[in-house]
Image (cartoon, rainbow, N blue to C red; front, side, top):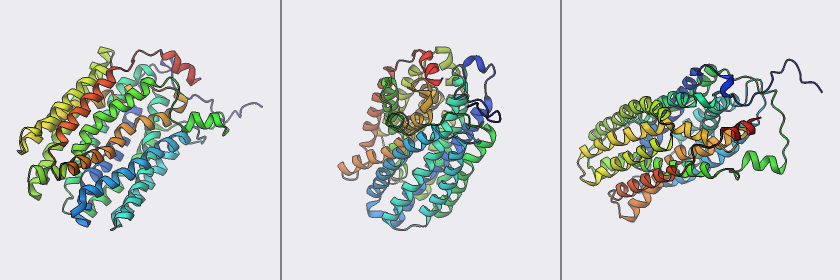
Length: 433
């Protein structure tokens, strides 16, 4: 049967020969989208959630934050795989990704407003997990725009543009969140409505083509394994990148997730001092990371390497994280912000380019990018768990967080060094056909 002439011919990816000009709008769309989901998420997760928990159950705050993180990790992992998998096979006139990022934006608004209203720990867990599911309906499909619509030769540049928005969200979210420490509920509402903008703005800029021309997928055992299971073939580099980046990110998020408690219990600052130094530290992280995200991408292209910059980034993070071991004076946290910001700026500049290079199969890009993104979102969840375990084991002391996280960053960097970044591009092109 002939294909309906009103249905556009299907192209799942773009080859170098098909894209002479850099698709800057894809970088802008994904950068703004990342800013508007990540910034609000971290503003809540890193500042407002711990503050809300402290209001409700102050004597067990570290344990409750860890409980929320553990439950959210399970929800986020399942959501990344399942929603990413369905995104890869979605046929609609709006494309594969757009319906999911719109639905995720609306769902994130509603579930975060729900989380704001609950006052018991069990309901906080349920609402927070529901929010994780909706948030990851934005994350995995949004990242897949880079695979779908950016040719391999242009991915370094577009990844840097994406990183610019990601970095602002990564650190600016907590700066904004800190301004609402005296009005936690209001801050959560503001973050919820900012998240609502993420998917629609990205979708309007991208204007994703119809996916109605994509061949229909039939649910067979092989199809389920390919589209809804962790990759099993040609995946060594995939898993090295996943776990290496997970360790690097965990090193920073363990500090960020407990930043409020570190400043209050370890640095021993009052509420005013906490608000002041959260703003200073995160502004330092953001400014240095922005500078490096702009410069590190072109340098990485010139070096023709992703893994060397990532290892340098991991080393800078390790040194920065270890600095507060020297003293509980506030200046050590400022130095941490400077060095970790430099490191994470380099990391973010090449992160998505590295992700795209290790994908086992472009046909399952959203699912696999969603799994790789667990190194980012998953670390936001694992970090507080690691920190809580250290604090509990040391009877309330926060000192042990610093040497452990420095070690995690170094091990993660070493794992990235084992990635084969000269894989044959023809393998991905053949899989994309």
